[in-house]
Length: 429
Image 1 (cartoon, helix red, strand yellow):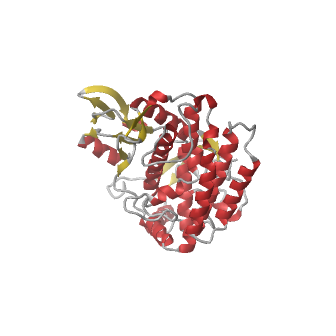
Image 2 (cartoon, one colour):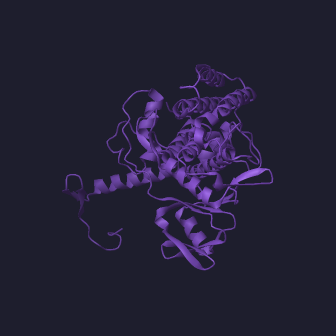
Image 3 (cartoon, rainbow, N blue to C red):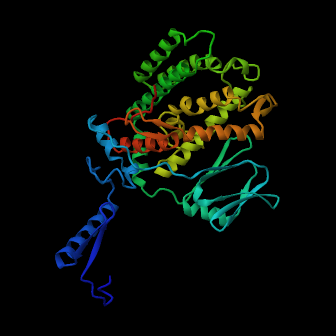
């Protein structure tokens, strides 16, 4: 470009930060031709329907900003079940969700910040760079300039009812790689692929429920009854061998009945007065524990909606959960193994640590719901859980639960494209 505009450019300098070396480079005809060929190749690659093959043990990968997207070590490991996985040098983003539940709250843009006002009085301010998503409860609103800025930055806005029911999701232009969704739609019409994915999801969920019982048992017996653990283990095996989605639904229902029949034994005995739990009920939940479970599942669904939108998948086209208007079937599919690990775990922790009490709930019209204070306390507990770092059982590196959701979503994309033999579900011991 400089030469075309009349400048004489004989060469340049490459600077290597690690060794602090400057290497002069002469711009001869051969190098210019090689550069043009590389640019042509990059343009062709950008227009290709399929991504390039991941590099194998390249020293360039661990510190690359795209390593969390192409996942070279993970793909190679899943294909060959061998090799050492190098932890990617991609930190969890520092930005966090902003939950706005104050009645009549109004959000506006002020420079590079977001301001929350109630009746024209500023109650808080947050830098847009520190916000990963905005969650608005009830009748909150925002200005058009702020909404435009959020869309430009790729920050999604989720709209919930006062009780936490998902009402809608505002995102930008969306992911431009239509091939990802093409693979998803094609697989969703393949009964064998649907069943294969669903079996793994349900089996992983049951195994994680079993783990949660072992870790948090507070029943009258010193340990979880062996017959209960054995039954759940058998349920997991039956799920892996299910021959139809209908059979799988039956296995999941049987395991859920065993699990929730003993869920109350995971709570502290001195808290059972306010948090007595007999069975799972919903729509509406009739007691505090069920109110917390329903709210936690709603929050986990929202997290998956955000992740699926970011990676280019359609949250409303699933494989296990049947398609229904306005039902985020894929989000419900992929959250199955994480229900006990994130949602149920937050409920147990919030109750056993005394973060919630009887005064944090209100009963009306046969249902039970959280008060504003109770919702704030539970949201804080949920966000702490999402930020908790755990070791990936298959890959061996540490990542927060929020980051792991994205890892799993991108692995699903690889499976849908036929790049790995099976989708690796997340389970913990």
